[in-house]
Amino acid sequence: MAEARSRMLLAVLAAAAGLALLAWPLAAFERVQAPAPERKPEMAENCPGLVASDVPRVIPAAFKVALNADQVRLTYVGHSTFLIESPQLVRVATDYNDYVRPPVVPDIATMNHAHSTHYTDFPDPAIKYVLRGWGPSPDEPARHDVTLKDVRVRNVPTNIRDWRGGTERHGNSIFIFEMANMCIAHLGHLHHTLNQQQLNEIGRVDVVLVPVDGNMTLDIDGMMEVLQALKAPLMIPMHFFSTFTLQRFLERARQNWAVETSEVPSLVVSKTSLPTKPQVTVLPGH
Image (cartoon, rainbow, N blue to C red; front, top):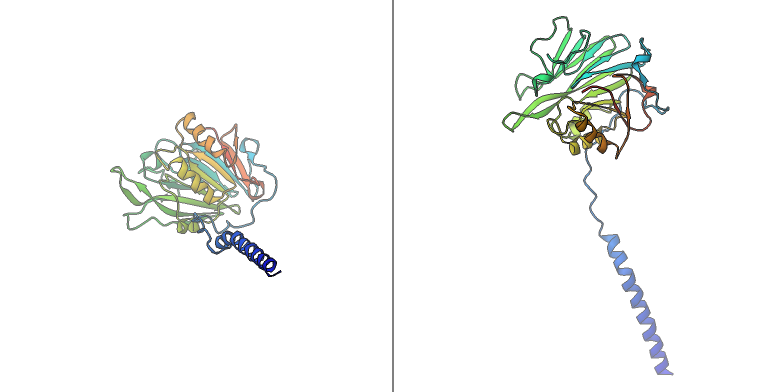
């Protein structure tokens, strides 16, 4: 009888030990947690107004001349130059230069100076505001905050590579255009990804005009990181030199977003017509 009781006690102790061994890895796993992945910078604030929740209705500008109070017309002139028109007919030309110019004299011209195709030393004297994206020295970045009628233009300085392969601090500006309750960002000749401070200064944007050459400006991997951080509903490529260059960017873009091609170089957009999911829209040009 005593021997039977001893065998039973040993069996109970063995079973308990087995359960403890089975439970040990799980307990250890619960105590030792893997470090959280490093979070990349991203937008934290929204552009004025609510993000659209309606179906996409971006309107080709060829079908509409006058603008409603909530609409903006974007026309791709070429290279990095867009003509942006507000409801009160304020006209803005981006990266205004001597080679590619809009057919009308703008009220506001923004410029960057990475290359001569992004600025001019001889702007049309009829332009009310000429906003250069670089300051008098690397220690004095350009700072603009201009309002004309229903348009506000401000900038966020970024760095560029110089001709010796070094860094020119504050040599480029991302210009943000606020009108019709929307924010439109022109990335200029962007050479690097954006840190959280720069993203906070930019704020959430509705439309981003993005250089996609992947060589002269930021490489494609870096540009994808920038676009994912900006989270703009509408992305419009610029600064591509060939069909090959454009298609290389679009192949990567299709991994994340829908891609559409417009038959005309102009679009009319409003807060309520923005795509409900991020979209790349290609305007004809080069």
